[in-house]
Length: 99
Image (cartoon, rainbow, N blue to C red; front, side, top):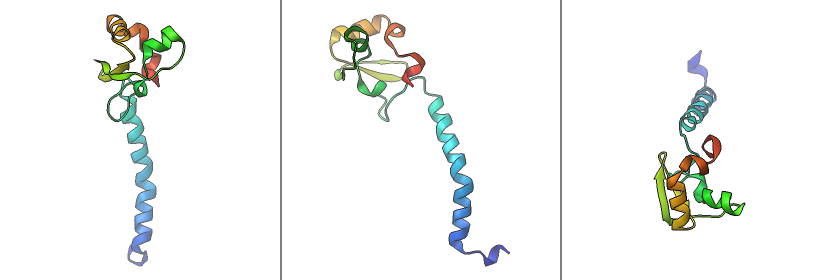
């Protein structure tokens, strides 16, 4: 019976069964990251989490003022903000890793 099915039909059937498994695997892999980060490992898309708390809005950080914490690179607008974060990261890091 399988001999009568075209190659394209066989490929479509495989894709239909394999694609959902791959999607679930991708979701599980992301779930293991403690911090929401970019492909390059930058936390919260490079925004300064300290500035969000002190200025009340999102401000893009600079790579020159960075700190590695919790397996992610965190960017800040100034050395002062970076140092405040380093002193107490749990205070400034977003809840649930920024997800």
